[in-house]
Amino acid sequence: MINMRYENVFFPDSVGFQCKNCGFCCHNQPPDINFKEQKRIELAGYKNFMQEPSNPNNRNIRRNKDGSCIFFTRENTCKINSIKPSICILEPFIITNFDYKTGKIFLGLNQNATISCKGICRGENLSVEEIGKAAQTIVKDTSEIIADKLGLSVKDKKVGFLTMKLLRTFKDI
Image (tube, rainbow, N blue to C red; front, side, top):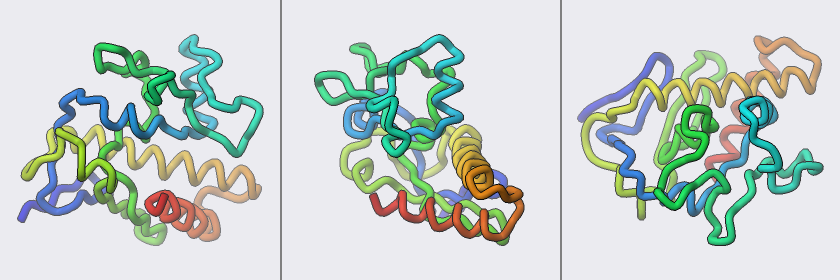
């Protein structure tokens, strides 16, 4: 059994991943992004890419007519690969748990990906660091957004608890 981890991020046992550019994740789950990532993409010169720009509760990126992410190309690549959202880098993994007391982040496989992603394999994950950093970014951004909304410090236990609770709901979607 291989126990893979990157710093405080723990991967599922014996599951590896190497992207094969199959486009499964880009076709089936155009990402929902936070405000920080939206701003980062806008600063790179991209505009009008949110599904409902005036609705703060809809954080989805627009889709092409075929249902794929607006940034997905016909060549099965991402137009914004160098600045793509952390949630895209994390695929086919999802955050299944965040222990705010210890800072540990636990990953599992996205249910849809287990069926169709061609990059999932047994053994070592070739991009543990990149995926681990993406998981860390998602937790950090989520905590910062919650702290800002509540007017609390990111280190406040309530912020940690709410971050954990929110991230757990995403795995069930």
